[in-house]
Image (tube, rainbow, N blue to C red; front, side, top):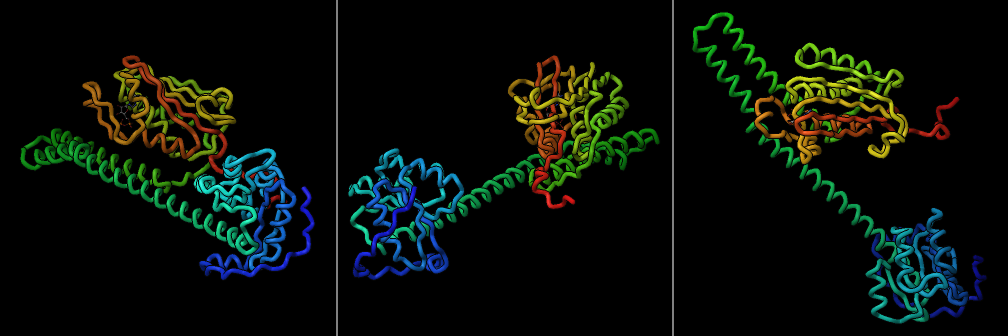
Length: 430
Ligand code: ADP
């Protein structure tokens, strides 16, 4: 839309004394030329605005004029710099305060000053409530008032954005505090409950060793018990610290090409030695491409799942399946596109009640039952699995039929879990 040619300037009006500007406004005012998007379908009104702002210095205003709301939306969407919008409420393609709402949807950060022929106080208040920075009545504003209204609108919107950012930072700090607080109470409760069991064992067995006359075989047996309890304590502490570090975002993956099939074979071989009552069956896709990931952490994922499958089933078959799926096959469930490594660890054990399928991934969430009472655990294995898998950009979930068994699924994209820089942007090309 062509900008109308400005008519000769009218005789200057006596300038009212300007109110002192806050420091940031003055600073911005002295430096910038502010771009104002004028949305006005009446050419005479548009020309008047042009004239009123043509006189302003420090800052100068540069006007972009459109006469339709759709054109204003397109301008804001185009990414063109706009410092403020001066908006008429009676446009051929938009009437009333919906004009404000529509432009706010497109550009929530750009301040809007309404300039309307309608001198209606209630409408003005509603306009400001709906997000306009100011409401001016046509014919009642002069050049410097308009310039000041625009400058202040920009400054107010900036202050609003700074306030919103400060509030967001504060909310994030509160959220972190809540997490810390929960971690602290979790820690206190785990020390109270879980640490007590192995410590009681260590105390009891060491007292026997100290006070009783024992045969060498008995000494070895009690020392073995102490050793097992101490190992359990160390494992719990290590897992707690690991999980804390991961949840705090302090764990970096050491990425390499990982042959996930080899990882599964390795973990299964170890498991077979420790679980003679279980049959461990592997069904691994030969065409599975290497996965960009952290090998040690992936070993931990498979180990935790397989050791749970063993712990929570008295025997039976544990089937570990690995397939390279395409996004189309698993995308609906995982939301991941591209080739995906899909690992399933299936057991024929006690299963998980439907209400616990998700909570088992929370810290210290152990299913309390007569069957699980004597099975040692920390309730940290699955949260660790979830953290590692999510660090790799993947997902983990469980399916189960109580009394018949459970299947844990892990899906991880084969590509590196990092931001992929498009080749065209790379500066390293020869
Ligand atoms: P834990 O150290 O207690 O095994 P996890 O975080 O690994 O901790 O698991 C949390 C809980 O989920 C377990 O205590 C158990 O109740 C349940 N669970 C995990 N894996 C299985 C499984 N394969 N079958 C049945 N229950 C399971």
